[in-house]
Image 1 (tube, protein in one colour):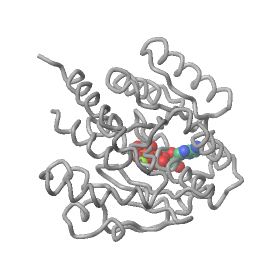
Image 2: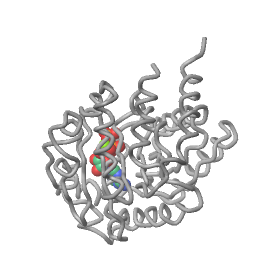
Image 3: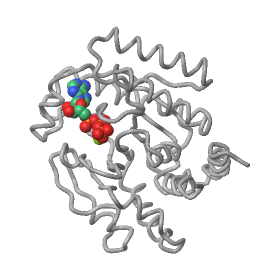
Image 4: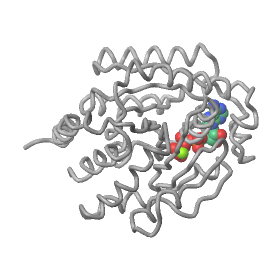
Length: 295
Ligand SMILES: Nc1ncnc2c1ncn2[C@@H]1O[C@H](COP(=O)(O)OP(=O)(O)OP(=O)(O)O)[C@@H](O)[C@H]1O
Ligand SMILES: [Mg+2]
């Protein structure tokens, strides 16, 4: 009997054969995740979005949290609708999107993600054609996943072509991130995985974790992880969450904002080297659903 990992591997390899077909003017889809919750994914996603938008990129953020969505709260906007309304056919993509600072657009995923799984093939095609519009609207789509490496979140990660893995110096955050990397290493070896250390106390601490993590992954899991940099512990982040104005906007010169800008620049510069294609949103959702239906 095939085990679950083997089943996932087979689905992924079938999907990979088709990905070049999708490669026509598609948005770059980047999934932001972590092993453990509460490491700073959402605050990082928002501030990264602002840094990229300031560089001239058109950004859409999707809140991929199955439970409590809070991207809108941190962006200082409010969203009433989301993927759910697109799925039920009540609204168009443009109608559910809310515009935030620097033209950043936001789509709430929330409970809609679960409903996606139950769509019939005709309804799914309609949904995918609506989602396909994202490729005209966005250069980069950032998907912020929810807390912890639950089964659903792991599938969201495995469906991605580019993942930013956020790790803090907390030992549990490191071991949980390593466990997630292990799943990726046995299922999606081609996935472009980048590591970011958040909330480190010193540059030395951040660098040490980056080095140890990437070396261990290379040696024991035989998987390459790119270090994208670090963001040190900075009180401007919690302060700006309370004020509901992203740090990159209200305190652009603070340490965290500067370090996130460096990460944003690396992300853009590394693009051509690591990613030969952008499969886009439609491909992402198809892969996610195939993984979902596998078990
Ligand atoms: N670099 C930082 N310095 C100081 N505090 C930070 C930093 N990054 C994030 N935080 C704080 O960590 C907490 C968690 O942040 P956030 O909600 O972004 O994490 P998350 O990974 O999205 O959480 P969840 O897994 O619950 O979705 C917040 O209180 C935030 O202020
Ligand atoms: Mg979050």
